[in-house]
Amino acid sequence: MFKKKEKSEKTESPKRPRFKFRSVVSRANAKLPVRFAAVVLASSTLVSALLGIFRDRLLNSYYLDTYPTGIDAYTAAFTIPDFLFFLLTSGALAVSFIPVFNQRLTTGNKKSAWELSSSLLNLMAILTLVASVAIIIFADPLVRYVVGPGLDESGMILAINMMRVIAINPFLFSISTILSSIQQALGRFVFYALAPALYNVGILVGILWFTNGINLFGWQVFEGGIMGVALGVVFGAILQVIVSLVGLFGLGFDYEFKINWKNQGFKSVLKLLPARSLDQGIDYVNTIVTTNLSSRMGAGALRSYQQAYSLSQMPVSLIGVAISTAFFPQLTEELGEGKEAKYQQTFRTALSTIIWITLPVAIVAFFARGYVVSFIKNGGDPLISSVLAALIVSIFANSVFHIASRGFYAHQDTKTPFRVSILSVGLTILLAIIFSIIGCGVDGLGWAQSIGAMLEVIILLRLLQKRSGGKLLNRDFWKNTRRIVFATCVTGCVAYSLAKFFPFMASDDSIFMVFPKFFVITAGSFVTYLLAGYFLDVEQVKPITERIRKSLFKTPKS
Image 1 (cartoon, rainbow, N blue to C red):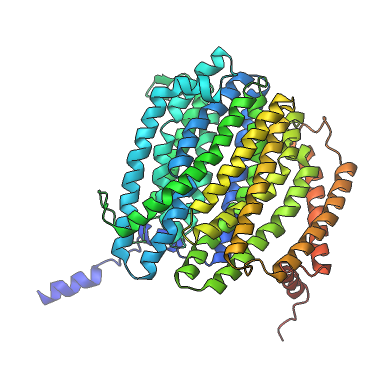
Image 2 (tube, helix red, strand yellow):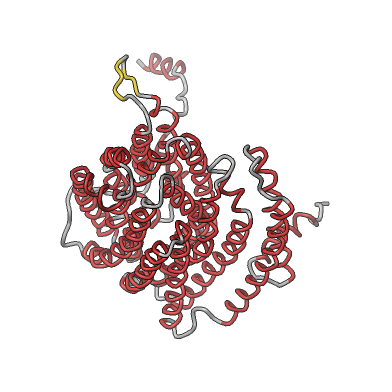
């Protein structure tokens, strides 16, 4: 027996290393430092934005000139499902959930934190499922009287059918948002960052394949057409849920299929959630109003405004949202530990960084707007360019808004931003109606948005400053900000000169003709900005110039 066992041991083949899915995912989902997290989020947002540009370029080239009624219907169909998602979930959940969730974790109460997560997931799934069913039932009157009264009959019918397909999105988005918020609260951003890109991948699948029809085992289950894009939207939402589930591996999430109404953390979130949800909802009321007004301004006007607004939101997502999202968990942790001075320093760093990056981006986007629009519409589009010019101020204001509002959310104060939103959105809607009546057209909607957004961010920052006793935005902050503004003015002069020297022409109908000119304008402007910042001693430029100096004048090892 002993010899047989020995022989067995000798002849036994060594075990091959196995690919362990959980291990790989856990490594990818490691906790990231704040600055690296901001880079990851900004990079993923950039990838998502590039996919979004490709998506819009395909849609506009297929439909904006040849079928403007169809593309307007597709754009209108999103409005109500997106409104309910923003009202019930979206960023409202993250900023209400993360401070309370982190508070439980810092005190070592993991059981309460996971109970809170499960309860919130189950509650939101129920609410959004009910909302999705309601959209399917009431899609007809919602399109006819709320978001698309200016569409012709064929456009209305198409928008109604598309809205019923997209209606499932609030339910799917609520699940992925809660799962992503858990990862965000724990400082895990890799899979959280992948979700938006996969959503655009789903829509691209709809544009490139579903519009040609769907065949299963020889049976044609879908004939194709622009409705295939709506199916791609749902497919993208499903991909988001899948990647959010994968991101939970290694985090120890203890899910329970119940709502624990007695959990104190859950009660706290429910108290915080209504104000922030209404804040999000009121902001989106403005979108519903602009959709309604632009649908009355002729075929293609609705899509043109939406495209200009989407372009203005890209830098907001790349800069304002990415940086604010990365800094927010740290802000809540510092306040949770009672470190008010450290919180103020972190907030100033985040705000100053956003201002430093956003101002030159906005100024270059203004002077090179013809090129920017040409990326989503081959040959450019004068109407979209004109609206984008009116929205330039909102790029800066909306970017700053994300960190300004999180300054309140870190204090678990969601009511103050809500009250400010009522004022700013009310003014925006009033101005949009007035500008429409006096004949400003689609441009007037853009100017209304910029004025309202700027008013909102000014009020929020003044209230934060007052709350801190004048300590938050100190003298050094304002000194550095003035230098940034001056550097931006110098950059604006260079951007204007380069745009005049390399004007966008109607003959620039290829991305290969557009990109070189755009690159020269952008590169020249940003090199000027860095040089101006260096000579003006702007705080954010110092680390960059130091790295360049070390790279260029690195002493070789002996």
